[in-house]
Length: 321
Image 1 (cartoon, helix red, strand yellow):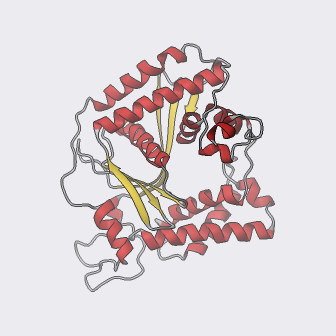
Image 2 (cartoon, one colour):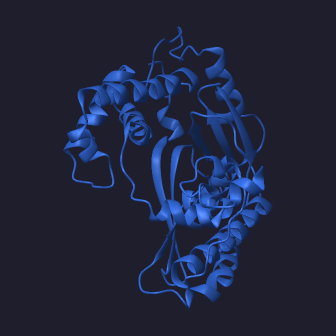
């Protein structure tokens, strides 16, 4: 590698100067999302403290009525309870079972994590390594048992579908450079109200890092479906947790749609973080009331009616028609 050129983690082709040769899609992502021109915002030191104060003041009334243990809150719980409380309760009570569709993203993300250090490895080989490692680990929160008991056909289908996601990621994303400090599936958490409420987040891809109070980090969530307004709500939740944890907000948030090689993004502002904090407060209050106060869940007609387990006994779908 030539002097002064950052080491590339994955390289398919390089030019005479040692720089990666990018496709138009990769160049667009690099120039407009990862390293866009222009200054980066600077935030004051007290912003995280103001956000924590807002969160704790908002959820304090329900914390006193909570039972023992902590209330864990993640993006999925917030999305479901805001979409429809009854939908959230039904999904929360249903026993989760791993399947090819459920395991696809987990396998693909593990494979992408391996790609950071396993250079120039084809997607299916990365998937094979990811599946082997998950099958051998002792974490029951992973599809370990499913991988060990799945049929040959199920494993083949899982391998193909996860490999497709990894291949699309490599097609769309420029080779990850070490000076970008890439993090894949990076877990974050924030404890509130003496650890009674825990906010959990896991970011698909984080690039760059803050410099003092200057925001530089880019957070990217990869999607295989179509754009949805709730995707930006998820990213704002990530930004809120990252801001409180680190003390500096990320610079940019993006939901990247691999099937279309397009994204929607927004830059982080203090107003955006305050909107995210109000959404978290409202969500935590609903979650706590449903879990600890035995309040009857309300139903809200929405797109979730089409796949809700309770649609046959709920008036929601009829009201939506």
